[in-house]
Amino acid sequence: MSKEKIKKAYEELAESYNALIDTKPHNAYYDRPNTLSLVGDIHGKSVLDAACGPGKYAEELIKKGANVTGFDLSPKMILLAKKRNNTPNSFFVHDLSKPLDMFENASFDLVICALALHYLEDWDQTMQEFYRVLKPNGRLVISIEHPFFEYNYFKSTKYFDVELVKCTWSGFGKPIEMHSYRRSLNDCITPLTNNGFLIEKILEPKPVEAFKKADPRHYEELNTFPAFMCLSALKK
Image (cartoon, rainbow, N blue to C red; front, top):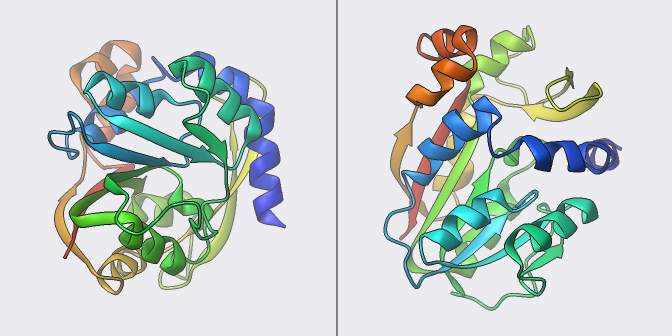
């Protein structure tokens, strides 16, 4: 089952992922600054960090004055998130594909989900739950792998299919085989709009200047063609 393979992979790389997440260029100087640019003023607001990993996004959101609750499929990632943010009661193990029954309707001002939705074959239930737990006019911010980049990277010949794909990650120490789902742009957008969200902004990000010093080759590549895509959407 691919979900168990994904969980196993993240359990194996959790420590190295956490050690590198502050400065790894694609995360620190590409995904994170661009995704955070969409969250707006969150001082005093309640935030759900869905698939929070080792809690780096939560750390940045807390610095902005937010009250953050986070969950992740990986128990090791949750332990690291608790340690990083010194808030042991704010993080718990949960599967992104499962209902958020622990939360009442309209519990959060913001839901953020960074680079995790591509691990789900079907986004509908997850979007329904994000919509349910958001307050009226609440905001959803997500980052995903760009569908055009994935189509090329995985050498797909079936653009309109949702395909199970895999690749080997070597940037976090020991090579790890990672499974995910590739999908079309349409299949990235319609799960939001079909479940009540009004898309506010689509951002095809460019790396910030610090990326250039850390990794000149990928800095030039990402200024030519995007690898990720960031979206913000409002609960109508």
